[in-house]
Image (tube, rainbow, N blue to C red; front, top):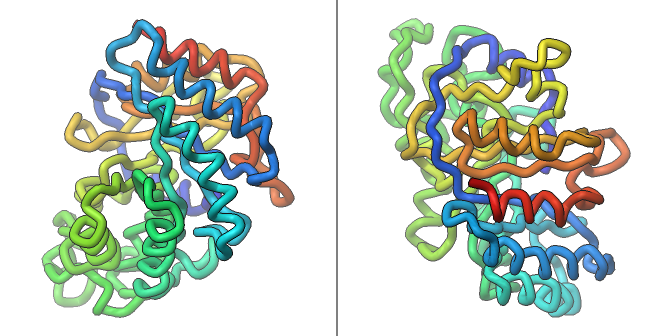
Length: 317
């Protein structure tokens, strides 16, 4: 999972307001981009899947682990797939689910999508390499680039009109956005998710937007089962130093579209991060003490308090 640049998030947030949240929650989605050689972490992930299922809560039971290779996608050789199965199977045996990672952009700071054929090939490789796969994580779920760059008030179609929505009523004849909603049908992510639904109907789909959608593109949440609409620091979530937690406000107010909050750089307030995610309407949540940097993946490990986090959610009222 690549964290989008702050300027992209700022551009998105500037266009949107907050809405009253839903109150239902379903559990954890854990980005675990952990080397296959880290047997200790894989054992913890497997054992704690059972904790999730044995907790007293009747609501928080989902325990989805998003997995990735060093290639930012599926593994590339049979030996790695065989090892991966020995890491993934115990998680599933204890009630967890395995979600495979793919990404949409050619470069994490760019606006050009990868060819659909390449992303589909990655998904096929995940299913072929691990037949028990439960879902797909689409990173860089940025529908804005179907119609325009990160800024501007006109439709420019940076990825070409063949990857843009078929219905262009969101723009005037001169290309200016007119406030009408963008209907996803025909666009890049509609084409991709429709293909997943028809080819691999057993797979759940998680789309990582990392932040709010632009205000005219909220319908894109309907393309996936879960949208990751918050991927930032604890300080951003809590709106430090105010600490009113307004950073977790949502722009999509409906239980029809489940949302995920990923809160990193959280050294000590495990309970607060989870409680506030729930009270702000997130169905899925996860927090870690790992710190984002240019030299390490913030999701490349699990926090020292991981088992406490699972236990807290599994028994949450």
